[in-house]
Image (cartoon, rainbow, N blue to C red; front, side, top):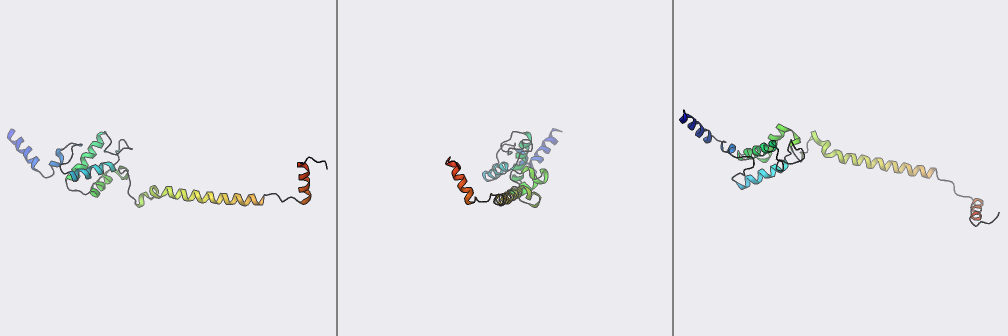
Length: 159
């Protein structure tokens, strides 16, 4: 019975991909280039628990699991885009700290600029209308008699 368990354990270790499961969430990959890729991806993924931190900064259990998953997928030969696609299929675009530009989130990317342009246009129309009304409501210029009367009042001369 012990021999069967030992043989099963050795076979499990010999399976392809078993080495990818043999490291912890924060244990670096052996290849420095792969580890650099993993760290870069960690910085671009949002922790679903913390919601404001990248998984590289988070101590949440789910963030550790995601760091391990990223390393496993990279060690398994996935490209960066494959890792992002896998995680966005699983968690949605929310997992990305910088969401991709695509039709489903055009409002996110272009909405603020659109609101600014509409607001600036509305302000310009408001200012033009107000200036036009001010010109229409301006008092008529003083006649010569009125001007003389104003001057005499300002000099304190009796009429």
